[in-house]
Every structure is written in C-alpha cells, then in structure tokens.
Length: 185
Length: 187
Image (cartoon, rainbow over all chains, first blue to last red; front, top):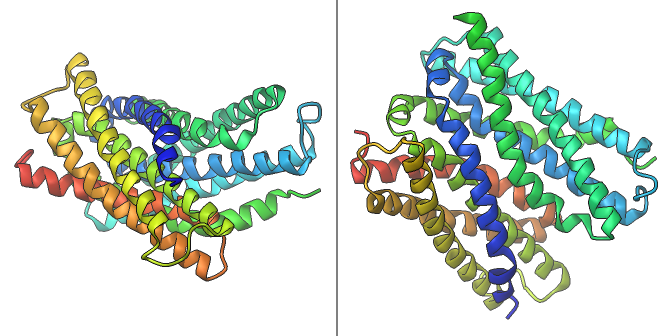
C-alpha cells in the first residue's frame, strides 16, 4: 500500500503547479490581438512551452545528479562542469527554437495561412533564448539555495521549474511578439 | 570533466525534435480554432492548466512505477495490484485537481472580465470532463511506457516524462474541442 502516500505528497504540489499554469494561461488569454496580427503565433505556443519544460527540467535533473556525484557543491558551484551544462542548454534552446519557427511557418503555409517567416522565426528565437537565460539563472539560484540548506535538489528543481517555466515562457513570447507588432504594423 | 555541451545537445536533440513535431500539430489545431478561442478567452487560460495537471500526474505516476519496477515491488504485469492502486489514486487526484482548478479559473476569468455566455456549472463540467478523459489516457500511456521501456532494458525514468507530457498536450487540446462540441459551445 504505497499508493496512498501519492495523495498526501503529490496532490498539494500538483495543485500548486496548476495555479502556476493559471497565471501562464492568463497571460495567454491577453494575447488574442497578437494572434490576430501575427498569423502562426498560436501554432508555436504548445511547442515552445514543451521545449522549455524539457530542456530546463533536464538541466535541473542533470545538476541534481552532478551534486550526488560530488562534481558540484555549495563551495564549488561555478566551475567548468556547470558551464558545460549551461552552454548545452542554451545551444539546445537555440536549435530547437529555430526548428519550431521553421516548422510553424511550413505547416501554416500548407494549411493555407501565410505567416511572415522572418517575423515568426525571430519571435520564437528571441522568446526561446530569453526564457532559457531567465530559467537557467533561476535553476542556478534554486540549486545554490537548496545546497546551502543541505537538501536534495532532485526533490525541488522539477516542480519548481515546471511551475515557473510556463509563466516565464508565456511572458517571453508575449514580450517578443509585442516588439514585432510594433515593427510590422 | 563529466559533462560536455556537445554530448548534452546530441543526447537531448532527438527526443526534442519528435516532441516539437507533435506539439506543432497541437498548435495547428489551436490555430484552426483561433476565432472561437478569441471569443472565449477563458479556454485560453484553461489550456496550460489542462496540460500541466495531466503532465504532472502522468510523470509522478511514471516515476513511481519506475521506482517500483527497479526495486521490485511492482512487477511488469498488467495484473499487478500495486500498479492498479497507483493508477486509481492518479485518477482520483486528477478528478479532484481539475474540479478545484476549474473553479479557480472561472473566478480569475470573472475577475478579469473575460467570462462571456458561459455559466460556472457548464464551464466546470467541460473542464472536469476533458480533464478526466485526459487523465485516463495519460495514466494508461504512463503505465505502458514504463512497462515497455523497462522490459526493453531502457530506464523508464528517462522515457515516461517526455512521452506523457507530449501525448498529454495533443490529446488535451483534442479532447477539449471534442467536449466543447458536445456541449455546443462556440459553434
């Protein structure tokens, strides 16, 4: 009978993540005008949220393992191992953002909508890189605070990044799309 | 040096490319319903919530099954009773969570003045129906992914979360529009 503990231990966290998602969703609900003005923008939303979630939780869990392996610790955090991890996440974010922009343009083209490829791809790349920087910084701060208290980062980084990740990503898309509406209209 | 950015990119990219391809498909469904979503922004608030809850419950279930399979208190049989209990608790948590969050979303929408022509009971029913249907599918996908990857000698911990969140995102959006159609909203 291990299943019952899932009720006590996971339920509060899942509801908390859901409340975070409501904040992300509220940001999304402010954007219908942007979706109207930038065709194809709505297409990238699920992909960019999924990318952010995958890349940052992978970074968090790699740093958790690095901690358990003794490769990084509270006194020796900013070293080459950490830098390689950050660089890997940023480069992945750039490649995948570019891919999302291209796929959104091509698939929209075949659906009979004709987005401006340069605008669409630029919006995704700016939002992707910006959110990658913010979330990487957040991950390092979380890991640092967790280390100092002697807690296990594996228990904290996943849910924390999942909750903040969606919100940060939505705000970044909102911001980067807003810049282009000013430019193109 | 244990980590190198080249290895991180090389190992991460294949799964991300597959996920992105599927998510673009989900995005095209949203784009197709753009005018309806502009009329009912309350469902734009709901989409990240529907996906987040299903993804989290599916991932927790998968991680629990993975630990059970590794340690041995869960066997890779579809008749395993410990697995059945985990599955049941996941469905229960899903139902409860969607119910609570649906009410919160409605209040947020009411407060930000984005509620149009939809009653609380109707909205909560739509979200709980969509959510429960989604949790059922996601829980089954989670169990199958954990069992199949374990049998093939792959670590279920690496497989379940990406598979479950990607499948959950697409199915969540499809189920939402199907249920909206059944309720006759936005037609």
